[in-house]
Length: 503
Image: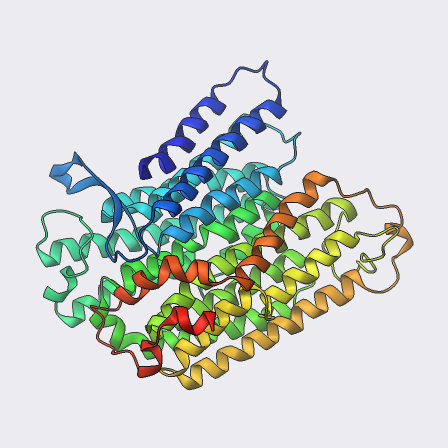
């Protein structure tokens, strides 16, 4: 069943890529959308069959492949990967609906998007280290091409920078996997959290360092972030939705799966320093976002800050904070996708993203009132306003982390306040005031531009009002993840998380 989440998009990519020229671009788009819709249906079916009490892997598939190299085709699903699998299919579908019907070289474009969807699904499901690495690297070239071919004026620079950074990330991760397997004397690359226990602590530090930097580039964390703003600014709107909503989660997922779980002893020693790194990343992202005048760059730097929350929660490593990690991944994926989609609509209608030029777009008669209303909702969610999923994720992160790192948590909470500051600047300058004459006759926003954002906004509110659904899927796994970790949860963290959230 899990293989379907990988091979349906791969098959779709092959079909789309080989379609004859007589088939219109609109029909090519429909086939791509149908392919991802089928993958989303499969992922939702998996959700209905998922046993929330079982702590181990479910729906396992284990097939021999290149056994002399220690590579097996082993897939599995738990509460950490389940929400991300659904998020991957859902946001890929949103990205496809956000794509222009008249996009150039449509067959290549849709094929690359489908390959990325398959690669991300494979990475979230793989439980062989080498298999994970193969899927992790599989998305590199398609995303590079999507930026390089369909990007903005500086797409060559941005795509090359992305390629170099991501290649370095992959090399470091591969070194860590090879080192762990070789030093532990393992005969295969099977995922085994007990492997590092046979290694000296010094070796664990070195290997964990490679993991932290490798996935830190992907997340990205300061100062490994410099590729992200350029990639976002030059990428088209659908690709920014994919990049922020899904692809960055490969980094945070890897941090938890291969950092915390594979090297618990080294992680426990390094945790205070990781918390400091998280604070620096949060504050840097927030202060840098305040200084931006380009809407897209502001949202991009916001991602740097919000990813720092995940590192803080992972460093604290309590049941509540780890649940906050998963919530923050889902929350950031939805909120950033909404914001980038809306920024794309603003740019398409006005021809600019400069907040010093834009004004009055909320004007009902001649402006973009629906876009403005949805932008305000997205900004409120990102700032952690109650009733939306952003509040739940930040509440879990801060409450779970405070008992372990109170000072770092309080400093990170400043980042939430700063989020409200820079997004308030964006909304106030862009959507309020008098609409300039040059924007007096803006093209109407079509339903194809509205619907993707409306659906994402509805889900942001729904998960904010009903967080118990995500808790139900995830709580057992996040609690079990700490069994090999050397830090003991405090009494407050041992409370039933479901009861805490649903009171």
